[in-house]
Length: 133
Image (cartoon, rainbow, N blue to C red; front, top):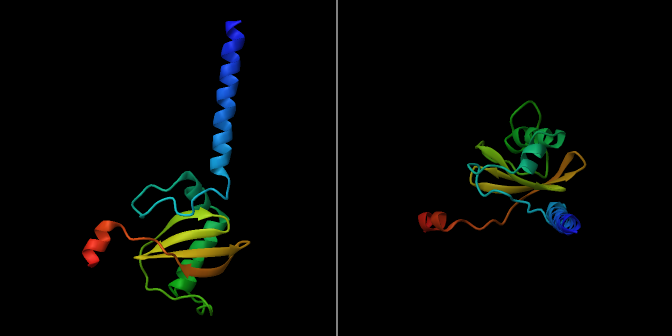
């Protein structure tokens, strides 16, 4: 009798944990930006996408198109930024958030190709606002 009760409680707890994990990991509920600076540790999701084919395409786009490095002419319709340290702040299909120097850019993909880039509206931390003031 006790064994069945313990087994039932364990099964209910396991189902509850699984339901919470599935709800949290859905693409629609994942935050696009999972770290605020390049010094914070990236999530396993961000690391996995950074090392994927899409991550490779993203960084080739940054260096060739945004920075204008390499043999290719700049692509029309995309911004040009000064060369600066770059890191991925997060991914959520079909978007990636990049920090390029002080800027945060949102990059939208169409398949494995970059479709558009726009600046993100990310609030500055209070310490940076005080320094700028």
